[in-house]
Length: 303
Image (cartoon, rainbow, N blue to C red):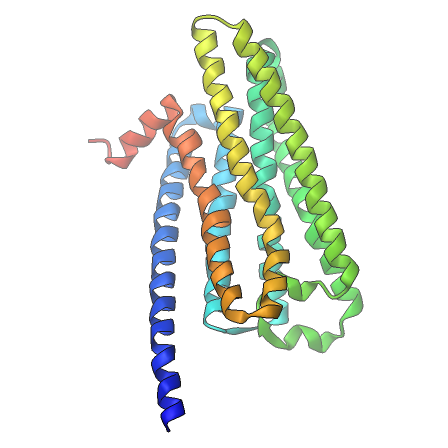
């Protein structure tokens, strides 16, 4: 009796802490989703934005970030409240989240390339940034984002019996990694993507810096803004790419102590999922003068 009452007393602060944490997360997710929806609405209300490559890519990031926020918040709630999910449903959820995880940094990389073309090759910008090439670039982004999870899915389908997909488990992407070499392959692919993205970012930043040094007057101001945008994108990309490393750390911690694992999952969600996705409105929604004016108009209902 004394032991059980002591256990209950120890659990009450923990339950309260979890409730406060989850309430805080829901408030933050709600705010970011509202801002993203307002930005998406602003994008669709102006035809000029729909014809500009950088705004189209920006809207693409907003869509991916919004879906990612909803799905990761759902996965976090399932984990924190120990809700078991059928493996089949969990696989679908994890596949979509993994694709969106790669989609955001790849789209940001495409946006950096677009700024490079606009600043360093202004005369060719209109010819390069066509509607057809915009659609092609987005299809390439989705195709590249789908490669890592599709490999894991094929291995899973080939190695697990049919009853596995009806078993209930805590929904984690690691349940799809049935072989040891899958973890190594996933890590290798993440590092390869990171390396390629880093090379592209460095290349665009150096060339824009060179253009800034050679420019004068209004061109210099425009180039300086593009340079600052690349820096913000780089920071955003680093946070997004850290998300690719977090599952490996969490998986190791989960084997040691479940409470440390829950605390780490909460921190990773805030630092590497919420934080980079709240930078998108800052980079284009608030820093871009044209977009900010239209956004301000609709934010106050045209008053």
